[in-house]
Length: 444
Image 1 (cartoon, rainbow, N blue to C red):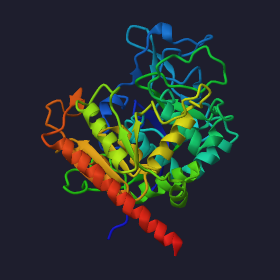
Image 2 (image 1 turned 60 degrees about the vertical axis):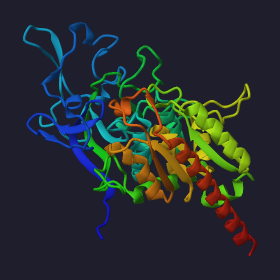
Image 3 (image 1 turned 180 degrees about the vertical axis):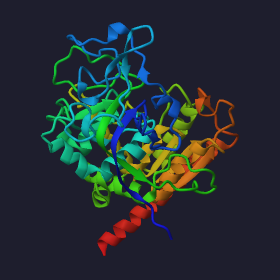
C-alpha cells in the first residue's frame, strides 16, 4: 500500500495574491504553486505589472495606500513601489521577488508567514476540512511565529468577520489572542474580503486585507500540503476537496482535546436519552427543504417514541445555546457548543450543506442521514467524512434540479420522507444497542 503525504512545504521569496492566497514567483521567476486543484487562477494571480489604483488612493500622507491592496495602513506586507501608468497616474507596482534583496531582514515584506487560508477558506466546509487540518499540521510553527520578537513574522488567517473562524482560532491557538474575548495579536493577519473598512481604528486592531485581490510578499512561507484521495467513496466518482483519513483523524483528536472531549468523556457525559441532531437550512439562501416542517414533525414523534431528544442546529444560530439574558454568545462559546452537540449526537440529519461538516466531531458509530445530490462531485464530501471517521452514512437523494447546488428550494423524491425517517429509526436502534453493550462491558 502507498502512504499518504501530509506535511509542510516551505517556499521562499513568493508573492501571495488573490482571494485564495495563491503563492507565485512573479516577474522573471514566474512559477505558480497551485495549492488546490479547484482554485480559479484568474481570480488570484497578478496578470499585469501593476494593480490599477486611482491616483487619489496612493498617498504617503496620513492614510497611506488606503484604497490599495495592503493591510490596514501597514507596509510590512509589501515591497513594491509606486510607479506611473502611460498617462502619468500613480499605480502600485506588483512586487517582483526576482529583483532586489531576497533575504530575511529586507525592509519590507513579511519575513516568515504561516499560511492558514486558501481556496474558499471562508466557506465552513473548507474551513473545517482544510484550514483546521492545516492548523494542526503546523501548530508548532504557528507557536514559534507568535512567540517571535520579529514584527514581520505572521500567521495569515481567513477574515474573522466570519465568527466561526474567530471561534475555532480562539479554541485551537488561544495564544494568538491577547486575552479571553480580547483582540487578536498583531502577528495575526486576516486575508480576504471585509464587510467594513478598518481604517481609522486604533493601532491595536487586527490588520485586514479589504480587497478582492489582496497581495503581499513573503520571504519564507510555510503551507500545509497533503495527498487527496484519488477516488470518492463508493459509488465512486471524482474526488472533490477530500482530506485524507489520517489527517481528519488527527484533526478530530486535536479539536476534541482542545475542547476537553474524548471518547470516554462522551460516553460518561451522555444523557439517558438518545439524541437526533437536525441541520436546518431554513435561513440559507439555497437548498431549503420544502418538506422541512413535515419532516421535523415526524422526527419529533420518533424521538418521543424512542426515548430520544431532537435538537435543531443552524450554522450561526445554535438554538441549543443557553437562552438566558446573560448567556455567552461569543464565537468561542458557539464553537464549543457546536462541538459538544455533534460529539453527543447519535443521529445527524440534514440536506447537503456546510453544517454537515460538523460530523467530523461525531463519535464512531454515529448515523449520518444526508439528503443530497446524486451524481455531483461535491456529493461525496460527507460520505467521505463518514467513511474516514467510522460513521454510518445513509444517502437519501433529492429530486433532480437543473439549478443543482444553487437551487433555492429542494424536495425529496417520492418515498424519500419514509427513507429518512426509517434511517433515523434504525440509527437510534443501533445506538441503543451500543449503549447496552457499553453498559454491560462497564459492569464486567
